[in-house]
Amino acid sequence: MFEQRPMRVGDWFLYHLLMVIPLVNIIMYFVLLLSTQTNRSLKSLMIFQLIIILIFVGLIISGIAGVRSLLPPM
Image (tube, rainbow, N blue to C red):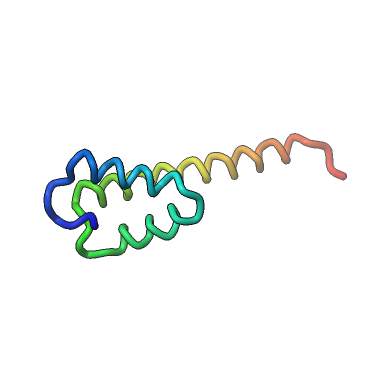
């Protein structure tokens, strides 16, 4: 689907359309990320998105831990 040729506007549209559908997006994300035939620019975008997600998850977890440390013990 997203092979090594340069991606066209329709390919990007299809990618974003697949990422909007719940549960399909998680499956397609890992299928495309682990495939050897995925376009390099798409794979780079997906790696960047994964890094950003991990950073935000880390910030959220540390924020929750910080707020919980400020609360009085129960």
